[in-house]
Length: 586
Image (cartoon, rainbow, N blue to C red; front, side, top):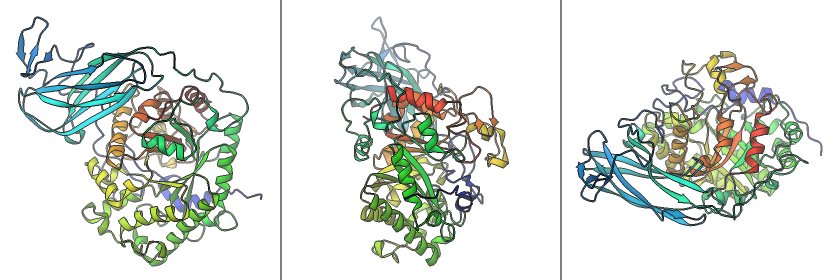
């Protein structure tokens, strides 16, 4: 059946207002205050501390063998090369003695990291952060021990960390890095880039990457895939989606570009194909095609045509404005809301194949701000008038629970996820995690992460015409790829890891990740703004899988941003290179 495919501009404007085609949450690139009246959410007042910070309270200058001049003995003193001992000095701050056994392993073997740390002075509530990097500099694992208490000159044991080196892992010297931070990563007390090392021997079993990036269009599963399957939550969800055991790459809306045409002409292989569904009442997504709700089938057909899993971003709560929560108290508003949710999941159930649904970006951040004491059970919403959720509470907890319940009932192969909003509690990242757990986000299937909803260069121009003037600054939007200055990618990944670890260990899908091109020149112009998320993510994919990543969906958050037809072939080149040697899901 031939479907009409409207541009949906009027509907998008009604649904998204000044969020520029929706979804402006989770901006961690510049310091700002919490939102007041603007419908465009803002960022945290305190950037997440990098796992490899540039400015340290007790900097370490050693370039080999760790950041202290000597190891620590069991008595809490340091042993020099001559055998003499000396107390851990205030200049060092912390004196670690970590080791890795065995010292040399083959791919597929297990190593154990253990040891102790001595502090020069007492410290309370500290976070011990042990990280493992392979010979190529990719982060493989991050082990955190929060709430550690130090007494002066008394060794504190580091609980043994066990890690299995993947089959086919690159040979060479692997580094163990150590950081010590105050609670919430609010400040860095110690960082050591090589507190211990070990060697991974070469293996003839390394899979040869596919050299082909051309040929006839094919599904994403036809590209080079790491052998075997992982045991992580991300690996399990990839298997349920019928996708390869690797970090998945997807495409969201490209605004005025014809995404399917561009995918086919560039021989791209997306694993996920994402679109918004929004509005409520006259002109909402159920009216965009006929019969009612057929837009969902249109998107499904397009996803199928490029071999991708369809993904929908449900954005109905913003129908009266992204920050306007009055609809929660309206029985007619919420009645329409639940009717549309039911239709969505009925259509996905009829599809009968795996799909993904991103549940209400921005809403949860506004709900956290508006709820008394940040308690979602104290923010009223009409829920149990919906027969499918008659047993649930009439509050925001019930809203989240009902979304999950309806997905499970009507579309058992639809997998759903919630997007935390770090501006919901900008000075307390742990508060955001607590709020998401309070609504029951840990019972969903994945977590939605976000970097920025426009190209960094657009924000650098502070152009009101493209909704690129936010937080009163043109600085801090473009992240440092060397991870030595703030803001940077390690900071963002540390935040995502905290979400993964704190919200049920769920896999993470990055969404609406901008597509600008890496550049040393600030700014840019319409459809050609600079950004470096595509470049960093597709060349550091193993860092994403190490923090729980399952997929990255790249897309534009406003109609004048860089897209796959204006990026000079960047996405085509980098995605093909990535798929030739993909990052396995652990």
